[in-house]
Amino acid sequence: MLNIKNSFAVLIAILFATTTFADKEFPYRRGVVRHRLSFAPVASFYKNNPNMTINTKAKAGFCASYKTEIFFGKKTNLLVGLEYFNQGFSFQGYYAAPGYTYVFDKTFAYSHTANVQEIDVPIGLKVAFNMEADNYFTPYFSGGFCPRYIVGSTSLIVNEIGRAHV
Image (cartoon, rainbow, N blue to C red; front, side, top):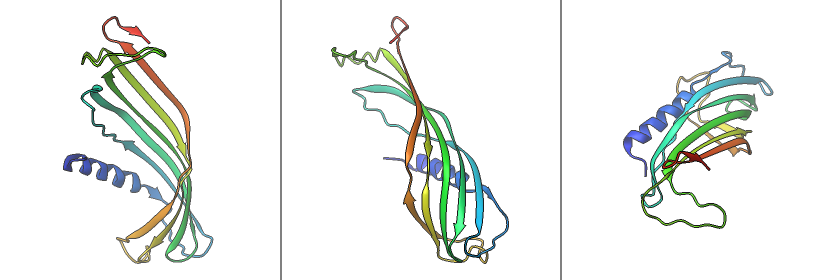
């Protein structure tokens, strides 16, 4: 469960990602398109299972996105875009080669490092409760789906005792 400090960090990351620059004009005519470009840091939070891993650390990550907002009316918009997402983490734990097993002896002799890169295609509908042009603060409801494609992932496992790569 996230504590208050982690929840606040996630909220700040979300606000940073959503306060991007967009076209300044608000031409609320059907079919008008507005473009959004955003860059944001990614903060990841992990909790260890003390029987399996220790020292889990998130690596610095980022997200870059381009989104198009198509107006259907004064309060309804369709959002379509493309996002690139990169994140990673490391931890100490066990390793079992195929066909072998291991003993949970709490040595955590292997260092694991992983990195994941993905491309998302978000498609959503945004319905605002107020007109955005008339209000500085406008609550809205947003929903949709986001197909995801894993571009690449890497994993490095090192035996800490002999410093051998697995």
